[in-house]
Image (cartoon, rainbow, N blue to C red; front, side, top):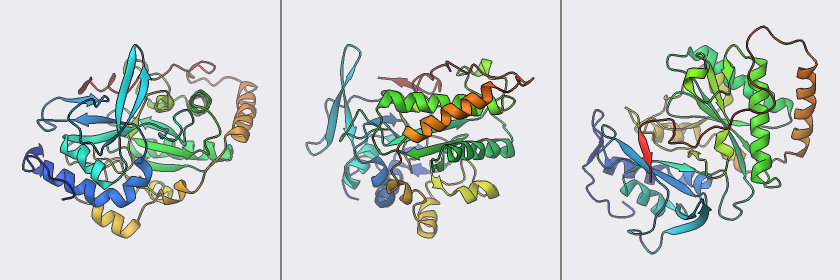
Length: 328
């Protein structure tokens, strides 16, 4: 192990026999493909001192108890500042696991430029029991809408119930512009299929529809890092995959696990490797989006209930909806 692991035999996934040592070994193994996606991004740790059978908590601020070599970044918050840990290498990634951090959640920006995101993330969050075919159609519809805007996109499982769709950015737009763009895309997508899609944040208002959550693009909001383990039975992975796998129905939200990812990476490599090279501007996409919005406004209203079009509700920060973790 790259650094000593305290209490490596501690069960973190008791029903699966997965220990803290095995979690740390996974992050050391996956580091070569995971690091390019997580390096330099402020991290919020989702920690489970007593394993996933007990409540966990989110931790942003690292003020004490960290090694001298661990890099941090100080960012403003209301009434003060926060010191986020930063992953820079395999050692710092494994250090997170040694803190009983099962899932590192990351910003859409890196410390090299915290004002300009290099990725835009859409989170498709279905209700419990949603038919895989409906969810698959929704994520493919988002891909196709982004393609209409001239943008290439990539997909990964969340390791929970849905999928994350990501667009690589060239860093030319600031955070508010990217966040507004994501909101507008989500609104248009939901209006195209109001029977199955919504931007209503509260579950009681969704009427069993899939949430198109664009709040991951707001300040201090996060998303589960690519290749992160999720705190769910079986230790599922938020795993990048190919669009062709989604089209065939070969990959579901929890298809890959901590114990199957080594074989997966050996055979498939990193399906997101091209995203690291493809930096896309948003200016023309924003213009095309306005055109599509205008076309939709000129059509007769659908009978199915559409979502609010002009001012979609902002999603709340992660941690406010899960009920499983508290923020500190």
